[in-house]
Image 1 (cartoon, rainbow, N blue to C red):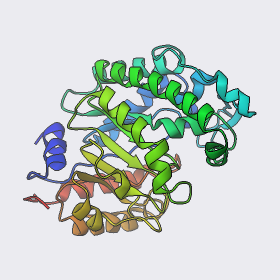
Image 2: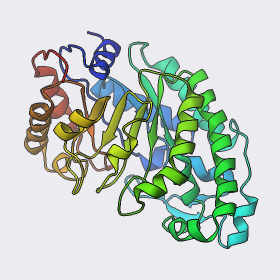
Image 3: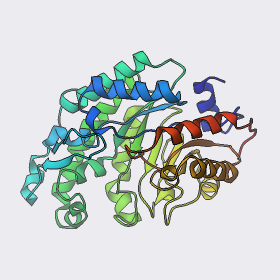
Image 4: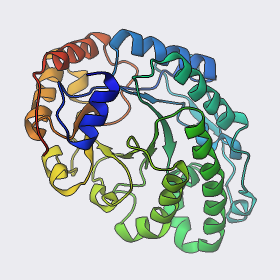
Length: 335
């Protein structure tokens, strides 16, 4: 099977020769231009030949149009720190307007998608990382958790700003698909965890806007929803029009892969803790892979990290996992 054949078969619950596999993470000192982002993404793909590529932009590209700025130390593995943000007082929400979807950081990402699609073999599906409008809105203030208290106090102001963000990203995701992405990887950040929100808040402030982005992106057999953190409200998203659901099935309070296969209509993406088993060496990582394989029977299953992997993740561990997946015998049927 080609990578695309394998990924599509897994997403549809059809027979595969082995589970599809892909890993991704930040490379902080090589994320500040389309050229650098594409270059290091291709280097990693050529080394590990992942079955699909999730383009992993710098964590704040999506809020730069509204004036968020981070300072980069330029040191590999060292996170940037927030330097500027636009919303410091309630009235600052009134200045959050629609922005061009194809200029600045967003234009840079569109160029990265175009470049990467040209360089990757056609058989390798490409997903672009996009964040839910509520998650984007939260990063316009500091700390992002402050939005939780603002929602009931300033609902009209927040709703107007959320509309501006959503409209901007509706145009952006349409352009992402035209640029050559096979689908979007829609991530909630903290805003899909019980530690931050409840189901009522999700239904009011996230769901309508998330669904608008997915509608704007258009139908795709590759769209994936990523629900971050522990205590994930994963099943609140079960009816989203996506092909796959990604979350950390090893994190406290989260559904297991087996539980999710029963309750979710799509495929499951994950299976190894990005900060736990993946950092404990090849033996522990391979054991985690086999636990995931046993839990799913290898059906409707794409092996991947629970979230973006840390920059210090050992290449030797990734290589060992890649080789182990390659040795996995063919699996049949639908879960």
